[in-house]
Image (cartoon, rainbow, N blue to C red; front, side, top):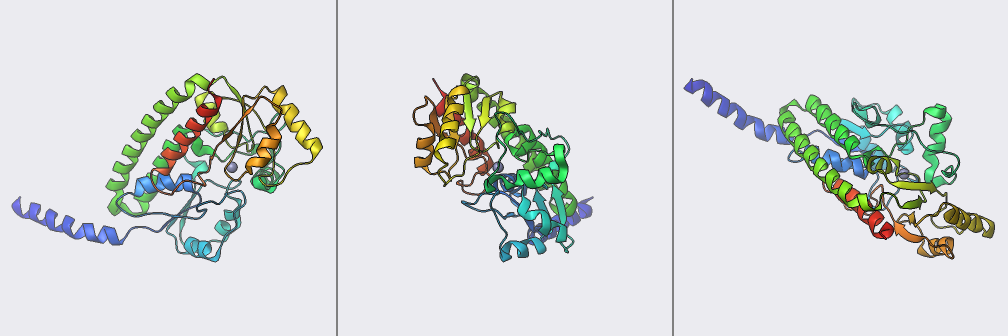
Length: 312
Ligand SMILES: [Zn+2]
């Protein structure tokens, strides 16, 4: 008995430094997903994220260092074809033995189709090129890839990440499991907080410049009434400006939400003469520092900015 216990202790002692050395090389496409992966890997390692600070996933193009990270990865997590279009080809061409996980296929996700037509303007500018590429490939099966904005989906992602890493790195499986469990609990707490925070403004109508929020809207029962396709740095012509103002009035939008990359002067011009207020949303966390807390900051940021603008 005594000898087997001693043996176990020696064995565990040898295991710990070994596991620290053997942390898998994990590459993640975008920051919101990387934040969840970071949480699952806490104490083992840190993932490499491809779309970094201040960059938009919709306009991103790969650098040689990104290609190198991909080619030396043990695991690659991305949402999937249609969202991170810059990865479509590199992932298909990946010659390494990396495990590639399209999180869009994870069990337990609620997926929504992309919206088009009527008050949901088709995204015609390059900012939303992914919509086009994808609809050409898959016609009406196009899935909206911004799935992390539903906290239930975030939990499904956490679970898939934990199961994937545990299979590849069995030595650290217990750590991944414990991290995934506490991360899911934190997401539940966040979800409850956001439900309470958003309930008072749930009925208030608003318009967005980038139709990337329907998972958030659906989960919290918000009243988004339309989207407008506007380039973040190019003033539309006078006729188009008139159309946009008409749309804001017709839809009785209380707020119009732009994103950090938009010129403030441009937004002022677009809403001038309407009763709408201006807010800012950052669904891809381009302005937030990477790390395990980013997901929580991102979701709280969306809720606070919606509430601040829409509150009566
Ligand atoms: Zn987007």
